[in-house]
Length: 401
Image (cartoon, rainbow, N blue to C red; front, side, top):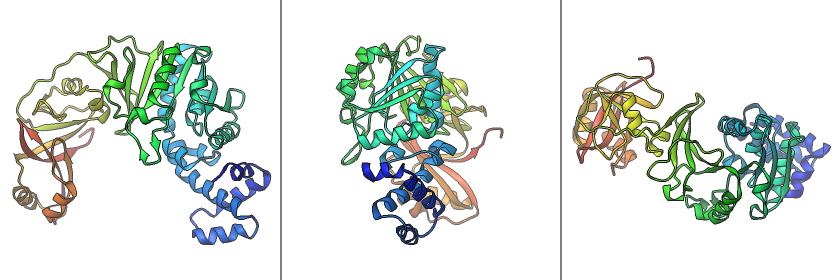
């Protein structure tokens, strides 16, 4: 979809084509295209059908808003889930009860600026791509936020963050080769982002959850955010938005947050003891693991580490916590495919969930090698205990059981 085709989509004729494309959702693509081509040219037909498909994809992140919004393929992929964007916006507005002035230097299709505007912020957004800017403007208009938001084509490096209360940045993490995990390959590049942070009175920066600790600015707060058990991002808070909690040894504060509930966890200085495998094993949420808060989770469940370097917690008490999945340990043994196969067959296990940490075993090959049949289920955890490859056969326990 090019810029001109998208702009035509916003005209009365384009809106009619889009409405017809939405009605054809689920139809055979060739049939849908043939039907639209009877009335519209090839470019508008393609733009309408593409947009209808993207709206379906956007529903997972934007809910009912997706039916009114516009997307690009990369935009819908990189856009923040609505619940995560709203979580950030709520914290950001604590700076000013009347709503802070925010400059969004990587607006994309507008997912974050929508949440910011709805929370009461006034937003000046920029992006380098004219098509992306056009899409963001269309979303602002479709959702009735034009009185709080401006969007224009500009380079982030040319923005003066000092003229706003807050700098917001969600740098692109894709290159021509696909997704990148190197902050220096972000767009804008990491040095540009750091330069903006230095001039901003406060900043909220969204980055990938695997960002190396050495890239986190000193004095910042790094918040790992998990949504329904999946780590979505790290939010770096600086200046007036950073927590007053004393920074850790890394020079910044670590926090983990669970959504949609909103539970949050920060470093307490806890040191997890190391001891034998108990009746239960706890798998901490990924946000707690990324934030190096496993010891804090261990303290919650009166637990310990079976291996000092592995993020599985074990204990003797069936403690419930949203911060960890809990499994009852049925058997612990040294790793052996033959012994595992025999143990699972003896339990009539035909459906097995295999988890691993600090194990080089190929899970899919192991699953094939087990050749299981039966009507029962089990969880197998491959890990290291006291520096020895080990396996645990477990029963998962849901909250409340």
